[in-house]
Image (cartoon, rainbow, N blue to C red; front, side):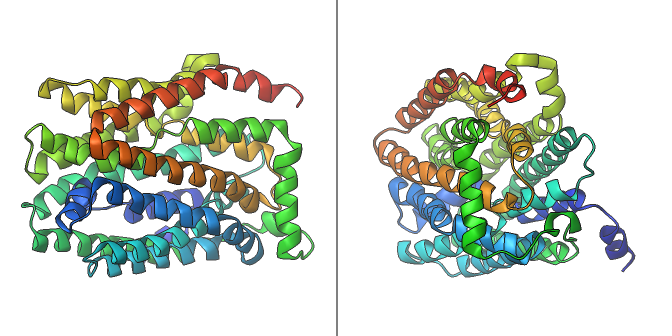
Length: 402
């Protein structure tokens, strides 16, 4: 009870960081693709599962964003976590491609409730003075919590799933479902920021139109959205493909595969926790450097021939795959009106999810023939997008008029 009272006294940013940790403590993530392969799925089918998730997010993103702006961000986050728990519970019984598809649809609806609502909840909970800097730090903390979970989960998961056999897989899945349920309980202590709702009652259609208008009329939002979409480093594709890639190098046990992901999560945790300081240190080329690095490491990862380089290059590829996200989130929220923040963010995320869903299928198809070719393709796309969008100019552009 004392612990619950302490938790209630924390701010929404800190609570969401804790929620993020427990909801991402996936003890089977480091062998998830291998588990699905054991159920008879091909790499194309495995990658299509994530594409189905993001495709569902694409369809549900705006409706759930509108709902978040109507019922409140807190309720949307709570609903998202409950749906995530249900998905993990049903995952225990999945034994064919069709059942994985149904769970993916449920997961996509849950993700879409969370998308936009969590950022809006954090931003509207912050004091108005120096909000951009506070948002970068808050999202950096949440991103760091996400990566900390990815550091700890594979280590515990490597012990829990000591053998690549069904009963061990199911034990890891069951414990993961329990962790998500804890995140759901903690989310009940979140507080709806009053400042975000001091406006007249509006219909869902009006909220949607306002969100679309913000994107259409703001060149700055369009620029940030283009960077967020086209420089995506596809971390879930990396997560799916690195497992069979390691197996091809003769690594056939769970623990070293888990350790690699754990160290990647730890490195990502340290990077995201300090991402605001890193960007400031690098100055004008901060966001550019952080955005282009994953593409470069993907190319290195694709050309490995010596197993000694396999671990460090994977670690850094994974660590930088989402490093830019807290910065993009801060720039994005600075340009969006509070009233319809969740809807506008959801519109942008919808486009990201559509892009990821389509490209995920492409990479899965390529990987069925050659995993290195899939990594090479991702690396080239990230590097070209970063250069063509002139990411090095974004800070200067945002300070100028649209």
